[in-house]
Structure formats: structure tokens, C-alpha cells
Image (cartoon, rainbow, N blue to C red; front, top):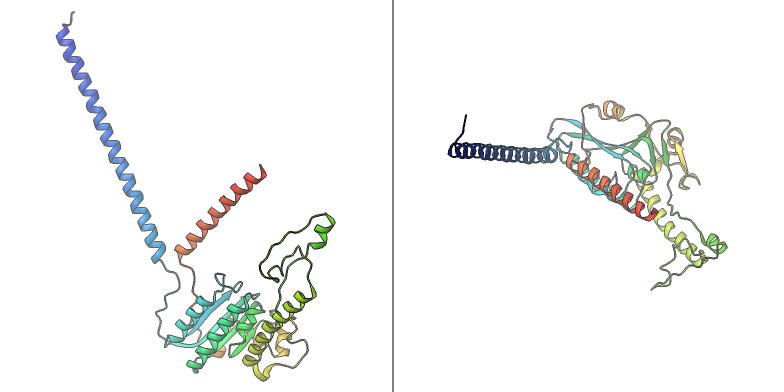
Length: 316
């Protein structure tokens, strides 16, 4: 059987046309799937961020029926920390403004922190109590209510704790370390250049002069007196006179009650049920939104990656 050149050429053309057509169809199919997946990914990202930004964050209070307002102060007190004065102030204002709020409970579990932030919160509680005299504020000490945390608690009308809670530490501390003797033994000299004769007063590699020590002690004493004045203003004649009261000691709940630092024993639920007589509790604590938590995790992860890379380069 013989095939003419003309027939063979037609067959080849038809085959090439068929292959080209299949190639075009496949390209179109891939392009459609690519567009579909990109669009799906975009929709997913948009939905994800909408949910993260508008999801329930516990910060929106709509109840106007009678209730006990709760504000948690858990962790270290400081700007940007777990207990931030701005967020606590916002929560306090939200609670006081709600007509259904019968009383406010500050549930405190904190070792303290910034005296400035503690003072901000204390003053805001005092201001709002004066504006809303019919809404009492109670503090409930959980595991720890010490230093700046007790500073805040002393602004409450009454303070409750567990017999085993750690309460007090009414004092001020500034800590560091001294390595001047160590570098001297190693034959290392410290070179510091300052504009201002006291700019290097906290340098751990330089010996502490008597003047620096005296100035630092005076500065801490001023802050301590502010702390003492706040506690005395808040607690009044309930405080038992003792040389140890403002020494920085920490007491158990039982000891703190004997010292007049707390008024009784009880949990948040106990205070709501027995003292406020309304066990409907609404949490006014300003919590980070899901998006903020997500951003924090991303930031922490990126920081860890960068640190790891940096440490890796140094070790090499």
C-alpha cells in the first residue's frame, strides 16, 4: 500500500493542528486553575482577616441589666505589658459608665511593676470612685498582690484575699550588678565617654561612688514615700502601726489581714455573691483582639528567626 506525499502532508498538518489545539486547551485549563486558586487564596485571606479583626474579643459590653463588673489585672504592670494603665483605665471607664454595674471587682494576680503605671491606675480608680460614689470597687488578691499591684489594690473600697495569698511588698527597688572588680582582675579597662558627669552612674563596670549611692537612695525614697502615702490614703485607719508595714516585706493573706492590708478572705465569686449580692459577672477586661494576638505571634516568630540567624552568623 502506498501513501501519496500529498496525503502524508495533510495527515501531518492535521496531527500538528491537533497537538497545537490540545496544547492551547491545556494552557487555558492551567490558566483557569491558576486564576481559580489565586482567587480562592485571596478570598481566604480576606475572610481570615475579617474574622480576625471582627471576631469576639471580649471587649464589647452590651449588658445593661444589673451585674458585677470584673477587671482582671494579671501579670507585670507596665506600658505595653500584661497590665497596661491605658487598657485598665479604659476597662474601668466602661464598667463605671454602664448603668447596670452594681460594683466592680479587680481580680489581681501580679507581682507589681512600674510605679508610674501603678500610680496611673490608682489615681484613675480614685477619680472614678469620686464621680460614681454608689459603685463600690473591691480588690481580690489571687496568688500574688505585691508591690505595684498592692499599690493599685489600695485604691479599692475593700480588699479580699485567700489565706495563702502573698500580699504587700510596699517598697521600691532598683537592681543591677557590679563587675568592676572582675574586669580589674582580668586586666580590662573600661572606657566611657559622657557629656554630663553623672550620665554613667548606672554603669555596672564602674565602681559606685558614695555620691551616686546617696542620690539613688534618695530617689528611691521619694518614690517609696509616694507609695506609702497612696496606701495610707486608701486604707486609712485600718492599717496597723508597725515598723515592718512599709519595709518591703511580703505577708500571707492571714498576716496581711492582721496588718490591716486586707479586709477579709474570699474569691471573686464570693465577693460577687455575698458582698455585692449579684453573681452575674461580666468581664470588662480589655483583651487583645485575635488579630493582635496573631500579629504578636508573627512578630515573635520573626524575631526568633532573625535572632537565630544573627546568632548563627556570630557563631560562625
